[in-house]
Image (cartoon, rainbow, N blue to C red):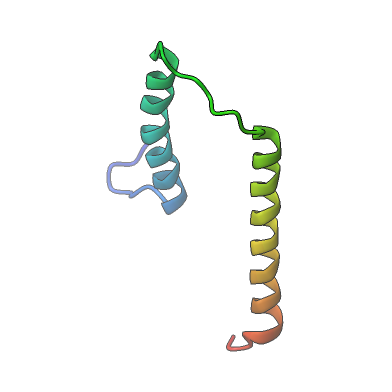
Amino acid sequence: MFSKNKRPCKNCRTIRLFVLAAIPLIIMIGTSQDFALPPWDFHALIGDMFLGALLIVFAWRVYKDFWDRSK
């Protein structure tokens, strides 16, 4: 299953780092007694974040395809 001489890929390391950071945070939030969410509209906030990410990726692809002709 795992090879001792093979290093994990970059994506695997990123996922492992995210999981190592996310699990303790989720446990701390879940066990907290005085945790109250601020009065924000989280659905709109998450939607705006996805829209922003989409626009950034789109702008990057347009730049790479039309202006960065080095390759």
